[in-house]
Amino acid sequence: MPTLDALGSHVTGAGNGAADIADSQQRLDRRTEARLVAALAGGLRAAGVARGDAVAWQLPNCIEAYLLFRACWRLGAVAAPIHHLLGASEVDRMLASVDPKVALSRQGLPAADRSGVRLAERDHPEWEALCAAPPVDAGSARGSDLAVALFTSGSTGEPKVVLHSHRALSYKAISLVGAHGLSSADTVLTPAPLSHISGLMSGILVPGVAGMRVVLMERWDPERAVDTVQREGVTFMVGPPTFFSSMAGAANFSREAAAPIRLLSVGSMTVSPEFVAATAEAFGASVKRTYGSTEAPNVTTSTWNDPPERARETDGRAVGSVELRLIDPETRRQVAAGEPGELVVRGPEMFCGYADPAQTAASMTRSWFRTGDLATLDEAGWLTIIGRLKQLIIRGGENIVPAEVERVLEAHPAVEQAVVVGYPDDRLGQKVAACVVARAPFDLEECRSWFRSRGVALFKTPERVIAVDKFPVLGLGKPDRNAVAALVSREL
Image 1 (cartoon, helix red, strand yellow):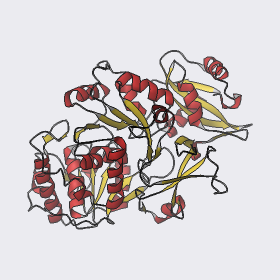
Image 2: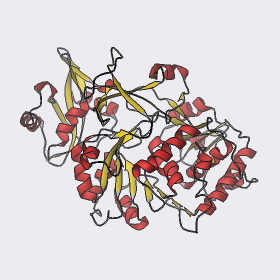
Image 3: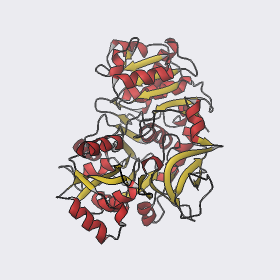
């Protein structure tokens, strides 16, 4: 497998002056990108960065962040991006966890206030000086070298630093180009943060393999996204359902406005068949579900020639040579096809481990990564994620998977989105609460009637319904279940 620096070498420097990479303020062609990457790598080297050193930054999606990834990989350094919305205490903890040789940020962000942090802003003297050193035109990384340190921000558990190698990420990017059927004729819009595995894959790595044009979006704005699709001829997007439902609800959205888009890959949270069908109809595009994690990115999806119902009803099949198994969480034995179990995976795209060896040991069983996700896997290899082990609601001894209840809720015409959590009960241990964003009035009585009409077991029917205008979300647009649970507790 090539290193990440070499991954895009067949297109880097080969541009014809077109805007191959764009953000809200700047547009670069491939030749200019190549020159700036070499110059920035030279500046980092002059600042003392060597192979294996970490370089951290807190930046939104912008060309400076894009160039920093490429410059780190040229030197064999470890790119450690920090989400631009994180606060000062979180930034301090992340900087301490990777001990970067160089750290950069933008004025107004918490990292910029830290001692020794340089400013990465176009036309700023510190950035210009960093790019003025003798260039580095040849890479020094090896396939086994660490390429990135990514900070997870899940809704449960402690934050973790996920380490990936050049070899693993190169393999994944190459396999995804084939699975998605992408080429240099495509243009991707990337609103997902480059500090997340989804943004890194769709905004840098996959385009580097395919030679695609990239449009970086600094902050999510559905109306601006619709305008960008039209203006830039965007053909491909990756993201959680919230991106596409908000686009479809934007004042300037129409099927004609979305006409350039041919493929939407939806993941990062549970995706219902109803959502896929409605989004495909709204956009007039192919819509498919994708499953992966920071540790094991994009391990399943459907391909362009798979039956549409598989893309709608499942999270796809294994991409490349990754292996999938379902095990009983208690006995650790493999379960039969079609039976629910915890998903464990292994394959060439797997992470190298966490920065904390104890966290690595707790997540691995031999060479298998324990995802913590509940799923079913049929005999043909089609995977369907049904929830998280840690999110299970246990009511009177009965296990309830929140995602299953959410799918029933979101099938109701009045419910746009639902998040289901458990709340304490002295007699039963837990009961079920539903927090909903509704298009029309939806109360507990209507909820109970709807679940009866759908033939759902009474113990799975929500016993509280709370309507909200919108959900608190994590960085990638996923609902923050901890915040929803806190909201439910306040309403008790």
